[in-house]
Length: 150
Image (cartoon, one colour):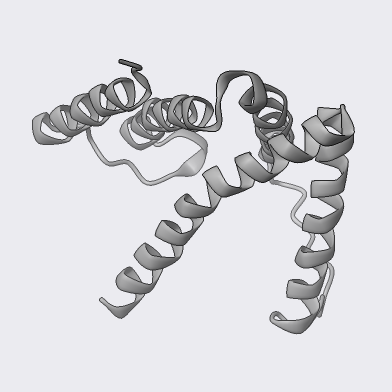
C-alpha cells in the first residue's frame, strides 16, 4: 500500500511537471527561434540528469545490460519522447500551453485505454469496464471543456 501511495504521488508530480516543461520548452524554442535547438538543449540536460541518476542512485552499470531478445520497437520509446518534446515546443507558443497539454492528455487517455485493454507491448491487461468507460468519457469531455474559450 505504501508503494501505491508513493507511486501515485510520483506520477502526480510527473503530471504536474508536463505542463511546466511544455511552457518552459515553448519559451526556449520561441526565444531561440528553433524548436529543434530547444529540444537538443532539453535532451542534453535530460541526458546529464539520467547519467547522474544511473551512477549516483543506481550505483552505475555493474554489468552491461544485454537482452538481444528484446524486440527493436521497444527502443522507439525514445522517438516518442523526441516527438513529444519537439511537438510541444513547436505547437505550444502558437496554440497555447493549456490547449497543447489538454490534447496531449486526451491522446494519453485514448492510448492508455488501448494499451490496458489489449495488453499492448507486454503491459498487463485491465479491461475497460462500464465504469471505466464512463470515466474515460467524462475525462475526455473535461478536456474539451477545459480548452473551450467563451
